[in-house]
Structure formats: structure tokens, C-alpha cells
Amino acid sequence: MDSVTPMFQQERPAPWYRHRWPWFIMLGPLAVMLATFVTVLLAVRQPDAMVVDDYYRQGKAINQDLRRDRMASALRLLAALRYDARAGRLEGRLESFGRPLTAPFRILLAHPTQPGKDLALDAFPDTEGAFAVRLPALEMTHWRVVIEDEGRQWRLARSWSPGREGRLAIAADAL
Image 1 (spheres, rainbow, N blue to C red):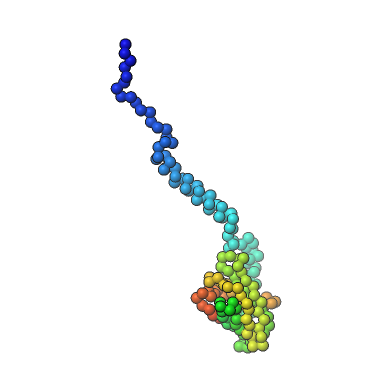
Image 2: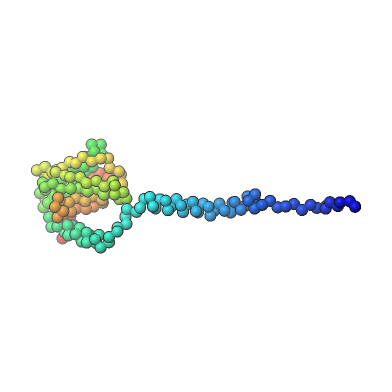
């Protein structure tokens, strides 16, 4: 007897990994897993600087700041500052009751997101209350400016964007 060959030979299907669609379908979850890994890596390497660990101590500090603001109001403090980017200087004048304040004080420039870029400048006014402080090139961002005396009895504070306004006037609030 002759061996009979079937007329239709059944083809074996290729294994799943040889098809394109399973790989295409798995591409979405793989992309999500990669994005999750990158997000976790960024979160661990760059912790949020805005988070405060001790809320109670921070609240007490806020109350002290309010007391210092009231003291600045009682002294009727007024600061006028000007940033000269070409000369790399911050200059200005500090007054109390309309008269020049000649005692040394400190100017703090706080960067909005990176505490490592904060600046603390010591100002020594002349007999007219005018001062000039050398300053590295300021990033044109939104700075928090705090002016306080050496004994930290009073303070003036305000936000400032040197790119928009080269001059800054800070007046203590009226009581």
C-alpha cells in the first residue's frame, strides 16, 4: 500500500514570542514601570526642601517673627534697595522715623526652591544710612528678602523679583 499524503498539511503556529502583538501590548506596562523607577529615583535623590520636620518649633518661630514685625512697625522702619547687576552690588538706605539708621544690619536673600543658593549679607551703613554690599550675580527669580538687626529684635520682609523690578522698598506695616 502506498503511503497517503494528506492533501492539506496542517501548519504549526509560531510560538507567541515570534509574534509582534504580544510585545506591542507589553510595551505600555514596561514604559510605566520605567517611569515609576525614574520617579522614585528622583524622589530619593532630591528630597523636597519645603517639607518641615518640626511643625511645633516652626509655629513658635512664626510667632517670634510676628513680634519682630511689630517691633519694626513701632520703629517705623523703611528700607529702599537697588540692585546693580553690572556692578554686582546691592545698595540702599535704611530709615527709622525718617532719620537714617546707622547701626549694622543683615540682609537675607532666600531662594524660592533651593536653600543652598540663599545669601546672607552684612550691611554697614554710613552716617547718612546709605550702604552698599557686594553681591554675586542674582538669579532672576522670585527672592524672599529679610532685613534684620544684629540682635534679631526687628525685621522687614518682602518678596522681590529683581528681573522685574530693580528697586525694592520695604516699609514696616503701620500698627
